[in-house]
Length: 89
Length: 463
Image 1 (cartoon, chains in turn orange, purple):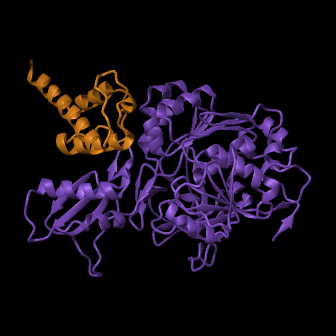
Image 2: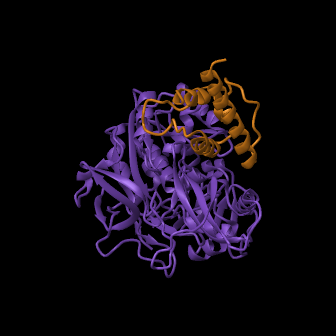
Image 3: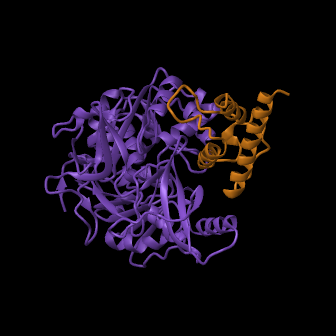
């Protein structure tokens, strides 16, 4: 696997770990994460997603949803991860 | 008590559109207005409640909508309880609003209701509109302001002040099917109910018990044409696959600052819709309503002769005067709602750039988390209960999903030692026991010191 591939894996891991941490903190039951799972069916509410986005900004130094560019809001867990992977280049 | 030959909400609703198939729907019921019209031939619940001060306390928004149709023009005063009114505040509300009767869709829950106050439990379908041909009162509508701590603040409106903002949109035409993420028991949602009723349309009510996807599925099934919510509601909606199944002609945001990103996303997502954003508050009423696709509002609206309201900027904050502002606060020893010239101070700070006005946060530092307001001081009060906390500062952090989230900085007492992680966890546990989720800091940073100004107050930097 390329260095780039490894970076991609670590972003995915960081995201899924953050999902689990925030779900636990917020007392939510997280559904098993899969790329085609809709975010809104994941057991997390929008406050949880907001907290996850803030944590990932701190941890990965990535904030792909701010700035008013063409990034659409993610529908599925896979969309969410891809937006971060693309932002990381 | 003022009596005149004015028309009530029900009279105006019937007059607005008799030739269209109109309805009020929630998650369990789709009630044709024609059915209500048939019920209006009987005496209904309302006849007994004439000239009384009536508190409407309902689990269901449908009950509140039907109570308003039944009681406007009949009751002296309607007190519209928001769903989150604390039972401990009920005695104050009952006394201040001089309530005679409580109309509800459920048995009294925790709070004690004094025996002098009648408690009427009725189902939504038992609330019949008042028959035609009877005198109509000018009913006071009592609404609760949002985002206050402690004793609730009640604001006096009438159907005229509430319906004022609607006149200019009636051109939208009969047959519009409205829906709103808002609760109709607060100003923003009530505006949408009134638009639907007075504009000859229908309305699909939201329900706290359904997921965003379930709500949007109902919106799609009912062929909603006009839909409103906060920017946070919309961001959440656009993250649902069902968002593709609705095709509104009109999508509107208020209740929070609509940034350029969410305006652009909505316009891209619903290319056939008019995307608008507006500013309104319970006290000030509607200030502006713009649909030019740009965040903020044009500076030329700052005028004593604006199309919707007179707008002034004074000491940095927006002031509103119009015939849609509330009449006064209800109760003794309440502050004046408006200044000597009739302007209501919104407390929203405005910055002007290139002929455009933008919102720059609240003067008193209130944090708006997805439309829910948080006073930093109430969160700091909880954090400061931890024995090792010397002082704390709660502030806003911009967030692309909810507009803002709550974060905290905490100074530890010099003598305190132990694991910083455990310290943070203990503070979070305190917050979780005392506060709803949106008020709990998403991040707690332990810092060496906080700035204290010459006044001895914490230096708060506006978000």
